[in-house]
Image (cartoon, rainbow, N blue to C red; front, side, top):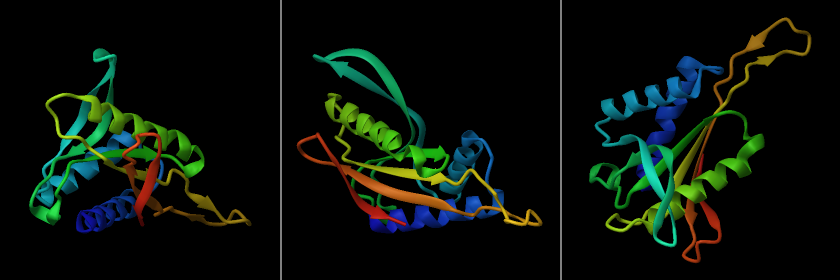
Length: 161
């Protein structure tokens, strides 16, 4: 799995370097989908996950990417990817969203459970020097992988770049 995480990190850094900050999240997601196609990585974009309450569907949520297990990169289990075009000031909110995705998938009958999710935060700001004579275009991107504990009441960071 780490091989996939590292490769995805290279892809997102390539996208951020070429496109830079301030593009809408959907543009960055489309660029990532293009990179997955070029790398022959199987994926599903915008996967709907049912939210169950007492075994009844009460709604759904949509994950940005679903990566099924595949031999390439030794990916032995499914993975959900959520992308955000924002700084990390809302990180707890993003992680709560990942937890909802993982818990929802674990309740679905007939599907393999997913315990891991990747959070990609694309930097959304360019930087202006103090003397306001130069703008530095951001190439920052943060990638983390989180795992839902077996108790389902916490998540643990298992990898980051």
